[in-house]
Image 1 (cartoon, rainbow, N blue to C red):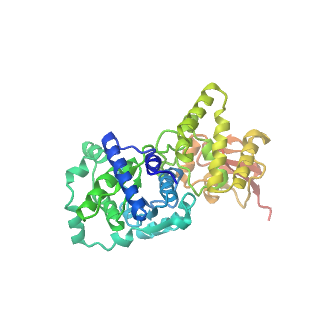
Image 2 (cartoon, helix red, strand yellow):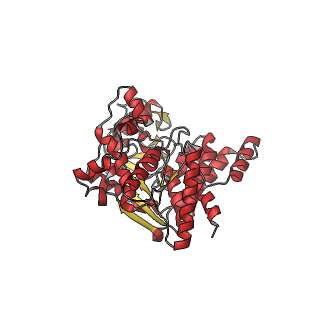
Image 3 (cartoon, helix red, strand yellow):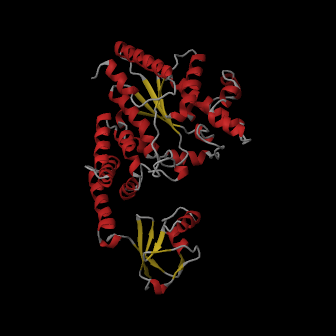
Length: 413
């Protein structure tokens, strides 16, 4: 087991608070907690919350999960908290407008597989899974007033996203102010020692959580705020399902492999740093190799894709995904040999075929892809939303992007 000082360095690695003094304070508090834990034998209570606004977690979420795993490996009590109640509001922390409110049924359906997804990173046997409707749904109006009395409206409106909306004349709804209050109460309900989160959670963890704990007679938690966010497949903007630049943890091996390969070369270093935990020396060696030409970015990207598919699926799945990638892009004229086959019973619009086969999520997505020449029929771009697949075209290969293919044939029955 590493020494306390070594543990502090590991657990504080990758953190950023926007203020060197705050970081030093958190580092000092963490060291004190670890020393006390060593003396008393009581593990620290550590958690991170994940709101099931959608049905799948993505690779960006695994950054905080890996930090939780570090605490687990040092013997501490880790809780994977599913925000079944906070999701009903939706976190406004990094949004320039109010989120749509979900129903309880939507949240419960989205949360169904969250824990299983988390176990791709966390140790199943050492992870406590909880849902925050357990305590938040029991609060009455008097409780809310009592909790809210610890904060001023100015504290919330000073937050950058709220300030920007206020300056732009955009509405800020009263229920959005409750989110920080609710997340703060999560820390109180669990009597948390440490909370892990991203930069967008700085206020909720460092201010709301600690202040409420202190008001309720608890010792304020240590905030572990991760400094960098994983960019999406565009290489620039933070990975987000709402922006469509995400790589889901539950993505099929071939799809995950292909999405990683679509990431721009400039994001290679941060992907290795945040997803694989590479050391500064490893990252420097990678950068030197890429700059000198000793390493080819495409080969390094394939190595990264294989590693990630191995982590979230299996080495066998990674090998199969690599093989298929090679078939599509290195041989056979760019077309896979094992594409699925579908029959057409009648002539159909291309958009209708795509939706029926779940190759796009909506007609709107299909139209956007057509505008970008991302849909091809027999290797020719389809740009007309009213385009029809006729029987005299069959058999035909319908392609969406670089990774989705289907061979269409006529139903002879």
